[in-house]
Amino acid sequence: MGLNRCKLSKKVQSRLIEFFVLEVTARSAADVVGIQPNTAALFYRKLRQRIADQLALVEHEVFDGAVDLDESYFGGVRKGKRGRGAAGKVVVFGLLKRGGKMYAKVVDNAKAAKLMPVIQRKLAPDSWVYTDSFRNYDALDVSQFHHVRINHSVEFARGRNHINGIENFWIQAKRVLRKYNAIPRDSFPLFLKECEFRFWLEAYRALPAINSPNPVP
View 1 (cartoon, rainbow, N blue to C red):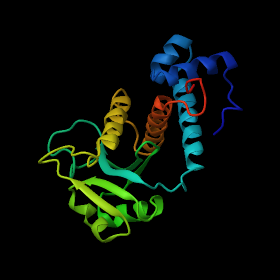
View 2: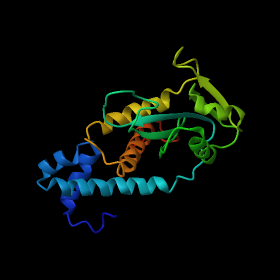
View 3: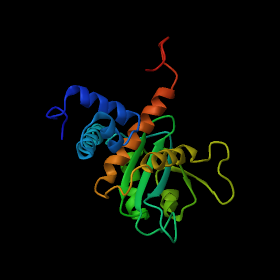
């Protein structure tokens, strides 16, 4: 699903890309550009697919050093239980290399049997992993990783013992996705990869320039 065979003019494509970067919804962008909302939505989907394809090229990348692990639950506001155990939510598991990249993946559930294969594939042995006190992370205590927990019922940070970085990603992702009503479940992974890319890009731009007198573009 590339952009090279898009029937929209280059000018319209450029405008839509600008609106996409600025987090303007496809419907609002369509109103400004003067095209059908479905056309803008399809173009946005192509952009998200391009992002997902590029991120897939580095999915094999292994994280090392200090890494935050956490899971979060996405979905519309509903009555009843929220957070862990809430019905009808999309479960997302994430790993954030401190000072580096974010990796997020939709999983069927947050049980250890689902999370550990992802962790073992994405983390180098002897990495320092930071989690909250969720019992499904108990398997990390007897793994090849150094496991450090933070008990959020008592405190949210103690020195380097925290998962503030990945929790910041969840906050930003939900802020971006909140403007969309009822994202189809089969499309959600593309929206998630968009959030992952935006978060990484923001972190990259915040880094100081290395061996260059010019700031990072």
